[in-house]
Length: 158
Image (cartoon, rainbow, N blue to C red; front, side, top):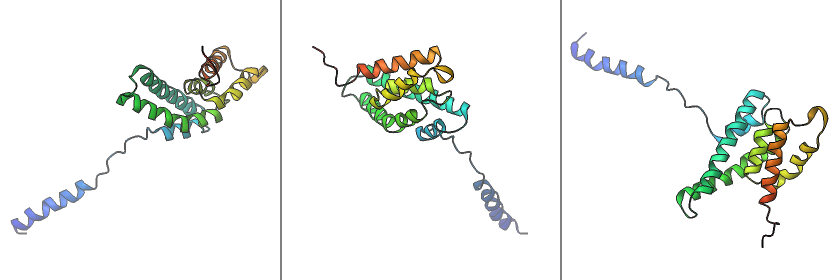
């Protein structure tokens, strides 16, 4: 085989094999993925998703509270909170009684001050017997209710 033909074919053969090497896909870390995990059947994944969503909501609330109104950080935090209101709050309302998600979901609903959550949270508090929330979860539900009622527009301050 002529040397010039080998010099032309060798890089083509090696290059063709190198371009078909699959690259690993980055993990899906979107809010939608964790909302679907929150509504899923796997208890450990549901608990992890509830805790992760709680930390994301808490971070957005903290950014909104600590930044100056009108700043870029404040606008980003408000946009994130709007997205959480649309995606996470309805999912937390559905997963409120699920094992492993009750406490973190109560925290999320309190942080977002979701007024639709008052009735389900009060129903959880009124539950007695086997399905009643434990002491720590009960405190979290009460704290969420206090936050929601404290942020209600019906409240009048002098």
